[in-house]
Length: 324
Image 1 (cartoon, rainbow, N blue to C red):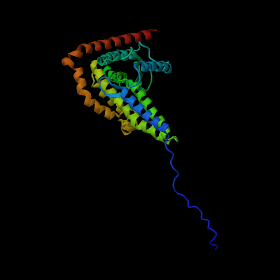
Image 2: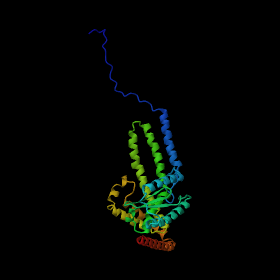
Image 3: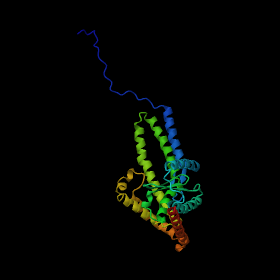
Image 4: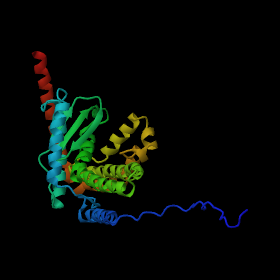
């Protein structure tokens, strides 16, 4: 081989990865700014729940919450049109009579915390096989008649209505909306960190499982606690709450499904709620039996007279319909 001819060698293959592109400064600034805004928002809009004194994020105004509640109320009146019981129906009168006393107790607690409970409560009773009751912001209470499979007297009805009005007293709807705003902000941030969207696909269900659902269960427990004490303040026997939820547990196959799936449910299991009622009952009974029982004695007598009067009116109405 001619030594003058230089052998041509192929360059060695470079296994080193290409140099990483630096993260743009604007992206870093945006991420830091968004995170700082989220932290600032959380602490700036800190609020305290009446009665329980729990700290939470609440960025919505009472006026906005009430407006949203009024809009949903009008929509549901159309949805349930034809199945809404008239105001003079015995069930409607009972719900309004019991609910009005619960509302008075809620107004008293709100005033003690320098808040307002909202406008006058509306009560809508809907003919349905579904056992349910719910409340919209601005105190629009709906009761579906299937609930009466489990609610047998006014004390038990007060336990349910107390729970629903407690949601509004605690402004849980506004708290959920506020939390949604904050998590939405962080969800958008994931696209800047990972434009492929993979991080977003992990973030959203994780937030739902680890934040939204636990908070929903916490709201239900908090409403149970406040509602129990609202009923006692209104002179309804708080022990009725256990009877209602025990009946619902029995009607739901002993609550086996709820117990197994509590972690992925919006509501705590029946067993959890019943145990909590045992924990809270002494305080509620002290309120109910205040002044040696005299605080509620006259009120309970008035309740009995009101029930008797309502029964007499309903009987006369039925007799008139038969004559026609």
